[in-house]
Image 1: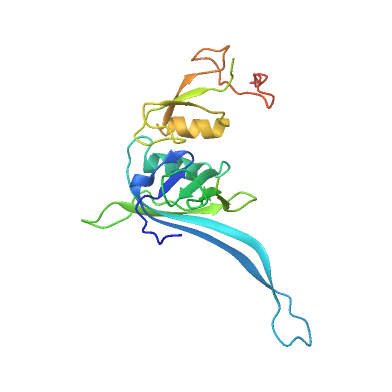
Image 2: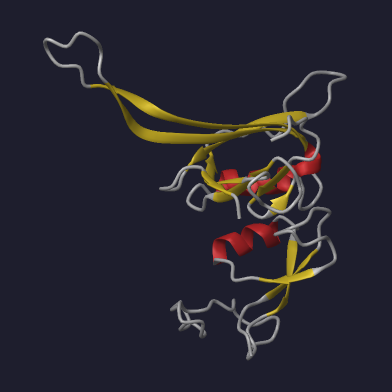
Length: 140
Length: 72
């Protein structure tokens, strides 16, 4: 697989393609570390606990209809309806060399406006996993 | 005829890989549909085959047919 420079990343939030307003993306997957070390062990015995996941996106804010704030504020206001987040490293079709990562996420924090004078209007949000599957990687 | 509703992308962003101005057919749960319509991303073009725009929401049953009307 060739090395890659992120230029053409695709991000959908609840079906809406907001890629052109996103400058940063991080998919995180982790599992709790469960220590099950017993007496007389010569080393710690660690098991993987319950997995967790999140997707953090850095947005250039846009208050137009259907754009960043219209999408994120709806997701934040309705935590009972997780949004499907789909990320691909390229807009090309999903394949073994262009996998997609999908997660059902909720927004527990959202800053619709944050910044100082002269700065670009930007906001960063972290979608927390709200589905039972966490982040699902697909190649087809 | 299909009962899958049709939507037009009305904002400036693609929705479900459908470009602005184009239409797509998809079964959306009511909350997701409301979120996209309220957010100005899509508008409904058609309801189920037997209903007209302006009638009650065209919720479909798991079998694909129209669901029983909700009680007020």
